[in-house]
Length: 263
Ligand code: PEP
Image (cartoon, rainbow, N blue to C red; front, side, top):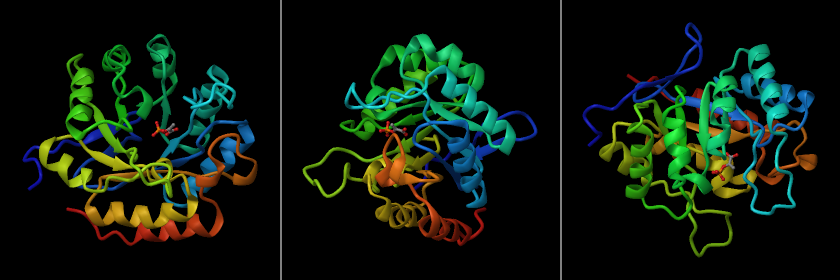
């Protein structure tokens, strides 16, 4: 019951592109936030060793509290770009303001629109004109239909290189930060041609749930996953409790390696 014309979206520089789509499984990993060059390089090295083919990292952080670490901004972008180059991993990073789209698009291989900005239509339109693929996260209170309409705002500006990311929705359950809506994956794959990946780190907020939720994502047929890793989660400036490290990351690497070849 998949959409008959499911798309493959290619991300990265010619010759080193990473596909997202129906015949592949894409694994993105990296730190929630870029903190220092050393921390970012270490996280990227861990991600690559675990089998990731793309690096994530936030330079502009949309934090709930204005007193929390807001990211390094432009300096964070420079660090992420340098680490991407050093490791050979294409980079995805969030843009939170339409005025920053050109600057972020200059460095990033893919622009991330986060849950808090899914319905920021001016930002979606600017991303649609950026010339870069867009990773569009689901708004935490958005229906699947609203999310697909948000993607239309990007597409309407001529950019069809859109990958959707299910990252959990707000429910009454406080055991996890959000509730991963696993049913959204087959629903989207039937309704839309766009690839869809899962972010279990931001869905759960708890590292011990990340590997089981990745297994669920693989089981339900998601087109990929995006997870937070950190060389020292205890001292992370952002979302340390959900960052993978050591044995958890090895368990995830094994789960990804066990995916049967896709046709
Ligand atoms: C993130 O991926 O860094 C992030 C903030 O995610 P979300 O928008 O899903 O909360």
